[in-house]
Length: 99
Image (tube, rainbow, N blue to C red):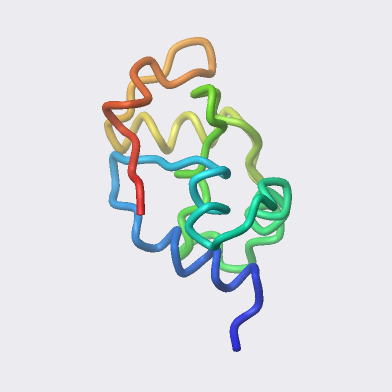
C-alpha cells in the first residue's frame, strides 16, 4: 500500500502543464480533509523534477510555498502559460484541474 505522500504524488503527476490544482482538491480526491498534510507532502517531495508540485496552489489562487522559493514557482508556472499577478493566479477557474 502506498503512503499518503505517494498517493499525493500520483495525483500530481496527472496535472498537465498549464494547469494547477489546490491542496484541498488533492485532499478531497484522497477522501480526507488533511489539506496541511498535502502541503507537507509537497514540501517533502523527493522527486521535484518528475513530480510537479509547483502545480499545487492555494484555494484562493495564491501560489503558496515551494521548496525552491515562491519566485521560482511563479517563474515555472508562467513558463507553462499560467497568468500570475501579485503572486496570485489571475483566473484560477481557467487553469484549475480537478480529478
